[in-house]
Image 1 (cartoon, rainbow, N blue to C red):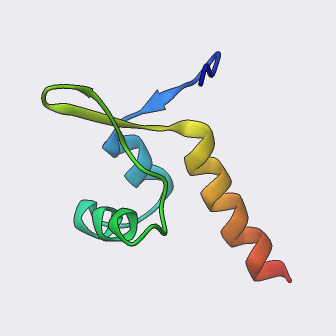
Image 2: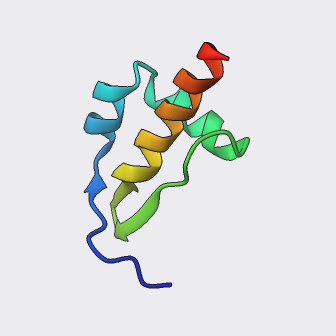
Image 3: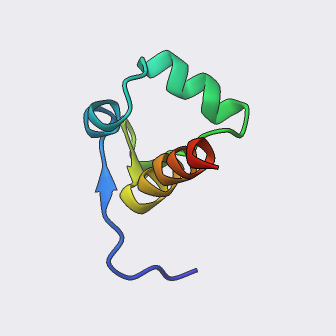
Length: 65
């Protein structure tokens, strides 16, 4: 699956947008309630920025309904 112009963000950027601890993000991921990280190196992971923003938008929209 080819996704042009995908922007990857590190955990620090995810946590700046979503005030959760790293361990809570990991728990949500394991439960299928948060976008999955991507392994980009032996000791490095990242998230797709659009997926994180969509996750936030979904919560805002759910609140407003």
